[in-house]
Image (tube, rainbow, N blue to C red; front, side, top):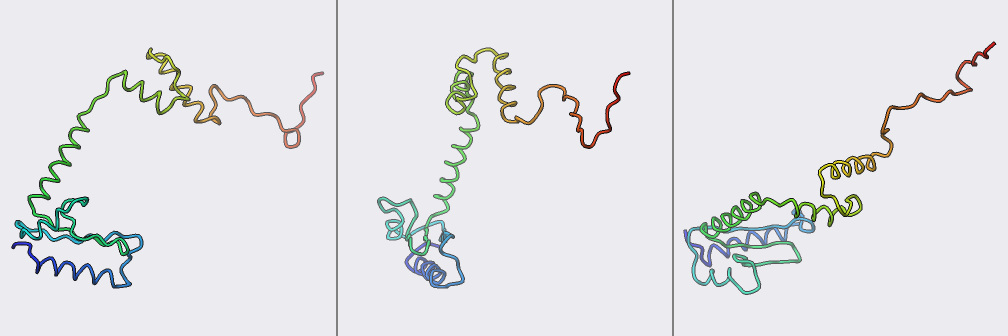
Length: 159
């Protein structure tokens, strides 16, 4: 099937029906209507590839949050391939030790000492940060609870 004026008119009618029906939420929901095929008429290609619009976007009605898209399967597969390539590149990224330390200084300046080059120093910094996060947690053995004079039996006096 080829995407032509008839198919686009049909998808626009569907979109208009949703936009006009009060039972469909249009305040917080974005409605995207898609028409997809292997081929597209030249006139529809021009409509779907206009300047200052995302490729494939035919109509965008801001007042009712409705968009209408026309794409070929080839375009959809190509877009997915580009996204997959990007994700793969991000997963293969490895940072150097210097980049990691620079990131720590930028994001957590208040917890990172300026010269934190040794592993021991980083471990000390990590422990200090942990104790700051949990101020109520004791650092050493807990002390014996204090004696409550009102509820405890009286102490014996040495004779």
